[in-house]
Image (tube, rainbow, N blue to C red):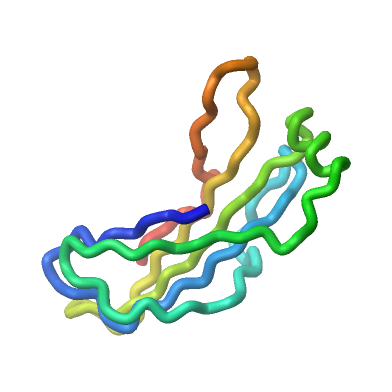
Length: 123
């Protein structure tokens, strides 16, 4: 799965680095501030209006048991990312976000990608 990030400002974001990961957790799991995210990727410079794609991959086998837990809404697939960069205002800016996938409650309906409560931030 890929997620696009866009520089919506008027100045370039320099030294852009991203760390992205995924995790399968119980549906009632609460994201904590120190959730581990590893595997930094250098994205270089993102100019005003430019877009880069962050790719998320799972690092665990998709077993029948996991599929059953996911289908029964006992588990959610979480995606985390932390993007750090420099711009004309600061040398240490950070964007952090998390969203998750769960099957819809009613067959035939498409579910969105809700954000994890309390985890998203921009500094």
